[in-house]
Image (cartoon, rainbow, N blue to C red):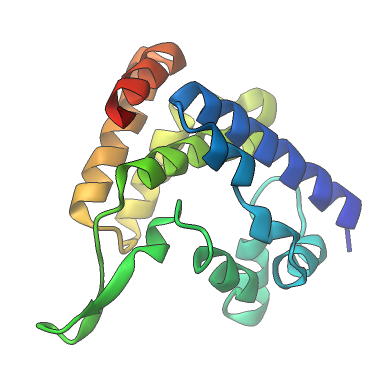
Length: 174
């Protein structure tokens, strides 16, 4: 169990997301980002499965076959596309729905921050795009409109850098 190391990682991540959200023009969302990670349901598995180079949810999932912490987290945090699914009465299935712009922006900030924290000195501005594209290849259930918007922002980051991407996002939010 690594509670101090996990806490340090969560705090570093939240701080980085907050900085990105401020740059993106959504400071309150940055301040409130991922508060559920301090609940026992998320914090205890995070400390138990902490490794430092990837999400503890992945290790919990490998050990148990699912991640209770992740299910708790995605159900309380609107910046995850997994939150945005609903029952479609026509198909009688749960399906992804488009994300509102402000949560899409927070998701972008979250993904960039996570890449920076987990990659450390090896971080490159292409990393968030590569991670997103690998998730698409695995068939993640994201609404096509949301996927297209996020891909556009991540590609802009990879090709034009943070300054131009955050300037674009600030105009997008207004």
